Amino acid sequence: MQALAAVALLLSPVAARAEWRKYDTQHFVIYSEAGEKEVTRLAERLEAVDGLMRMASGLKSEIEPVKVRIYQVASDDEVEKALNEHNSGVEGFYTTNIFGPFAVTPRKTHTEGDFTAELVLHHEYAHHFMLQYFPAVYPGWYVEGYAELIGSSKVLPDGRIAYGMPARHRGDEISASWTSMEDILLKAPDKIHNFDLYGQGWAMTHFLTFSPKRAPQFRKYLALLTAGAAPADAARTAFGDIGELNREAHRYLDAGSFEYRPVAVPIAKPVIQKSQPIGAGEAALIPEIIAFRDDDPSGIKKDTERARELKARADTLAHVKEKAARFATDPFALYFLAQAEYGAGDYRAAEAAADRLLALQPGHVRGLVVKSLCVAEAAGRADGAQRAQLAGEARRLAQQANRADPNDPLPLVAYYQSYHLAHLKAPKEAVNILSQVVATMPQDTHMRMLLVDALAADRRFAQAIAFLMPIANDTHPSPQRDAAQALLAQLQAEAAKEGKPGGG
Image 1 (tube, rainbow, N blue to C red):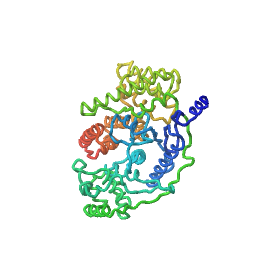
Image 2: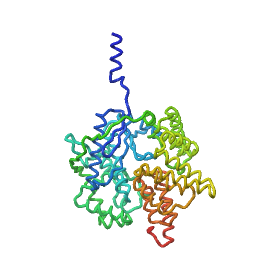
Image 3: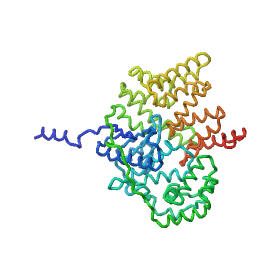
């Protein structure tokens, strides 16, 4: 009997060890331990939301999708750990690092009600979709309002999506705290106080999207902004009397009858196109992958906040080192170690990890990229003929990586960096290649700032300003936004000196 009980225990679902698997769909790569049934449900909703936005925006089907990685972790505790937060109530997040754009969502949460992890995931994916496929100058209220509009759209029992479902999680306080649209549309953002960017942003976006009269005007307004018109001029030209627009929007909100459209969104079936287990090293490193930050922390103004951020990064690096030592022959673990050491500024350790990886897999594309970057850094510390020789070697490695995978953007970045890090003037061809990378990876602020600096150095101010705008206009306060706004003012002043007030 004891033997039979032991066998039963080994075979029971509770005793079964969860396995991290990677699931490919048409537009996403989902990492989860949940099992195919739960992942299929998640994938169907994600693909439906993606399809809804493609239909609403008229995105052409032949445009190659940039797949977003989705990490489905066990709980919102793991979400908070990745953000280095505690008791924050965060239900998920979207960001990007050297691995590309990704979102983190929990399988189980501590909260109840309308503000769900799924809503947060859809909201954050809407941000990705807007920046990836329609990069332009948008007012902050519309950036968040559009994401709320998409996030609040529910999947109905018959499989259709209720596009425009009211954002009930925003409550009934929107009308009571309404800020005049005259202020919002005609004043600079820093002159508007106590504005509910999310709640009223959703209400304004819903009104302007579903009003037969105002929707065409709204499209004209966004087109004028994209063409470079001043926000106040664009609003008056598109909407006419802003006071009447405000009264009409407020009446719409007070009526409380929000139209929504049940939309049938066809998705590819089977929704999961491929499924496979991931390597042991990568599975062990998932907490570090989603916690890894490689943006520039130097712009964090408060000493205590900067110290906290640097400590979190040092802790992540320590965990990466420890796990890479356990998985010493795992290609992913070695690559992550090389990349993490490079991000921390330890170029010798990064190159040593890249060398170990390339000894195992001589053609490893990302290993060649890190090696190229390390050699370019060494070139920047050298002089004369040695600098030229090292820069040439860095360029050769970048070109080898590009030949191995022409679709990977990072070898192209390494090619540009073979000049930039070596303190050599990059030819126009290399700068143009970098602009192609930013078009592929518009969320990566580091790549974008590299391009802005290169264009500004060539006094191509109009292009530099255009690429800087998405960071300078970010709706969320951040050191990167502050630095971008300061640089924007500087570039505009430089452009004005040359008689190009618009940066043209």
